[in-house]
Amino acid sequence: NAGVTQTPKFQVLKTGQSMTLQCAQDMNHNSMYWYRQDPGMGLRLIYYSASEGTTDKGEVPNGYNVSRLNKREFSLRLESAAPSQTSVYFCASSARTRSTDTQYFGPGTRLTVL
Amino acid sequence: GQSLEQPSEVTAVEGAIVQINCTYQTSGFYGLSWYQQHDGGAPTFLSYNALDGLEETGRFSSFLSRSDSYGYLLLQELQMKDSASYFCAVRDQSASKIIFGSGTRLSIRP
Image (tube, rainbow over all chains, first blue to last red; front, side, top):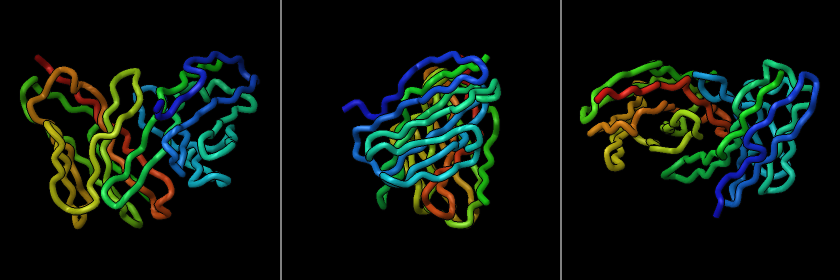
């Protein structure tokens, strides 16, 4: 039971390059999320998927696209990277019941755009 | 819209007790969560309050007052390993997405 996994762990891009960040969860959760975290800052929601087949914009969606490939996988794509997208990216999935509301985070992808 | 406010930094002494406050504004309320994040790591879930009162989990407790739109995280018997950032979080009015506070950095002195 790996929880939430993300690849790659580190990436350096040049301005204008594209890349896809991969995320997978093995906890059978319906909801998945992509956040970015800039140094010394909180988590800002980029996109989320409440269930397989649906995606919605979060607080900072510009410059990103997502795909909910199946229930397990939720990928984030940067079509044309910019230095302002240098950040740590976290994927998460969530389990919500009457008594708890828990987000499980992946280890993060540290992205630098030169 | 939704917003959460928490102090940016708190300093405490090893072995002491510290309280981290969080006030929130939401259109609908589905509960208040707390997360811990060590430098270089990912956030991990600590506690959740859906109803008023205190929830205790070992050295950590979390309190909620829905009438005051206020909650806090209480850490007792502080250890050096508790040095981390702590985030409060709520769901937005659609209940689909989760909004995080900007975080409180807890520094512990020997």
